[in-house]
Length: 283
Figure 1 (tube, rainbow, N blue to C red):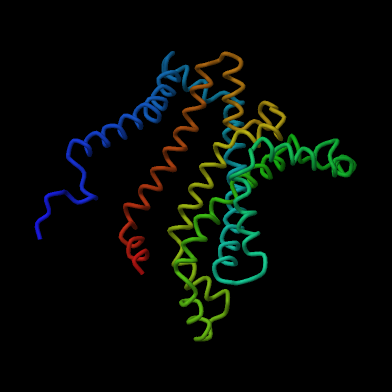
Figure 2: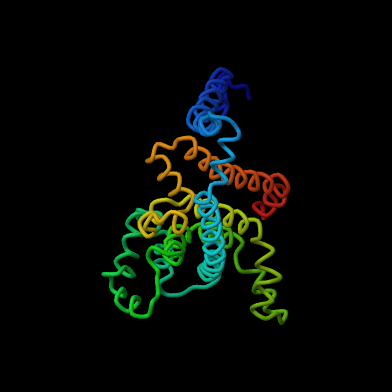
């Protein structure tokens, strides 16, 4: 039967071109242009000034601290995310909905508020402050506080990536493995983990990107001690407030390159394993 009208899912060519052009213009104006501006400003006084800003001791200390905090927070969130996703998707228990809500809590709470909560609990005048001071334990204005704040704001990423994936896969494979005599650990290692490895990698990449770029929560608990408790985002803020724009943008390029590296790894995973992900989605 011939129809004089076009399919509701088929747009005119001019409309498709308009939408594509609008999308490209949006990406160029809000993403590519600011990113290019960061590198242009960083190199405004030449390559030597740029490299000197990156070799500055406080910048190197901020880079090392950022990688250290991310290196601690991401594995902790990896363990929590896998455990929470396994529990929520493979088991029924009272309070499951509450647990899912709590996992989403950092998405709705301002990072600054979460940092203030840790100050209230572990600060000198906080609930455990006097006991910590008495035992010479430093959490606020030290690396442990930075790790705690970063873990809080990033722990939903791995769990939220895995929960819908594991729920879609169901429990049949695990039940079959248990029926054949596999232990719980063997079932997880040989059945569950291979099925979620790509989603797990995505979650880790996103968690790592957020951990490296986190500003609000770590700003509250860090104390802004140069060379000791400043991560890269905090160091950029200090340099910018001191009108050292070249150094500020030079350090900002490190954050930009780390973000681009994360995107590159994500794109590589999608390119190399996209057909496997599509096959799993169909099943």
